[in-house]
Amino acid sequence: MSDLRSTPGRLGGPGWVPTAALFRTAALGAGLALAAVLLRRPDLLYLAAPIVLAAALSLGRQAPSRPQAALTLSEDVPFEGGRLEAKVRVIAPGADLVAVAVPVTGWVQPAGGRTGVVAGLPDQGGGLDLSVPLVARRWGRHQVGPAVVTVTAAAGLLRWGPRDLPAQTVRVVPLTDRFDGAADVPQARGAVGVHRSLRPGEGAELAGIRQFGAGDRLRRINWRVSLRAGELHVNDTVAERDAEVVVILDARYDAGASGGIEGAASGVDIGVRAAAALARFYLQLGDRVGLITHGERVLILPAASGRRQLTRLLDALLDVRRPLVLTGEPELLDPVGIDPRALVILLSPLVGATVFDRAATLTRMGHPLVIVDTLPPKATLSVGSPQFDPQWSGLALRVWRMQREARVHRLAELGVPIVAWRGAGSLDAVLRDLARARAAPRVRQ
Image (cartoon, rainbow, N blue to C red):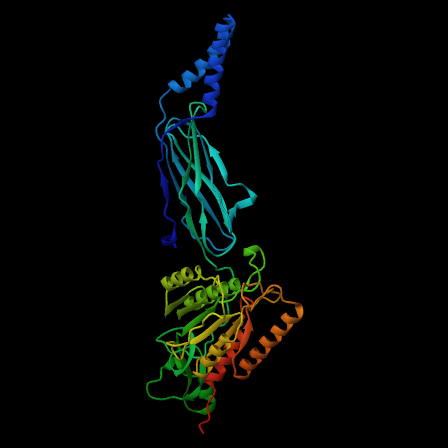
């Protein structure tokens, strides 16, 4: 994912300025010389001479050139909990010491409890590479910097800086919950894939045994059955096809406070990590995956396959966040334009009435639908909305949960499976049930 690396920030900056040490040295030398004249104490000149001579020799050396500095981030895009480096390249011929401070706030912090301050001595050519190891504690786009560079020369008598290098953006991928579930889907209709379809053809899934016919291959002959029956029989298999999966992420509300990779997960954390894991799993199977997110803004990413689609999906998930200001229930678009045979996975905390209406609409339209409940088990509803007043009493919160459970029960009566996200294998049972239901013979009335 080298195409996601940050653009380096560079700075030349103004020239050198005297430091407080130079002013103190000049004042001390001048004061001793003046005292020697006024007090007729020539011995004071012997005290002033070394100070003035040392300062003159330091300033008389080759004048340091104007430093050049650049801030870059390590090329690899980290996952949550992964590490990266903020690298500062400084070229300052004639400099004595280089100090760099990389202030970081939020979810990108110095690794190992260190500070973001490093210093070093330039080489003979004046070049120096300094790095600050960082750890990314939560998915999203985060700012690193601006880095502050300070360079000293002439034994600390001259200073360049402090100067700010422009802040850089790091993309942290939400791919910690690895999903490794079953490959069952209700309808597989593509050209080639790993899912069992309803059509006969070349595949590994046994559909039955039938008599040998014209065009059957010899390698499909079932010799055991043929010997018993006295005539040739062949194994009948079903074709394997790819499928289309549409992930709908409902991030209109959040519940609980995010603690990053090392703490508790909020509702949006669970939804984003689950969406990333599901997208990666189905794309690795060769399926086509699309994404629809409802949060601060609506994003629709058409279904496609391949590694490039995974990169687009992950990049889109980095911008997911709930609306900052809520004056009512946020809008949830009608599910239009979705392939009727696509597997729809709805990730939602199931808050509000609209999400239940949209789920019922998807079911009545014939879409195979699975709902993943992203509400944390012990979440406190603290979103700044009339529907989530943090001053609610425990009784009011219990009443709200009872109303939510009643709506969930009505969806279950429509045949919509609702499961909580628990990582690998969370959807195995419901996907198998959906696949069996689609494959079962239907009675025409």
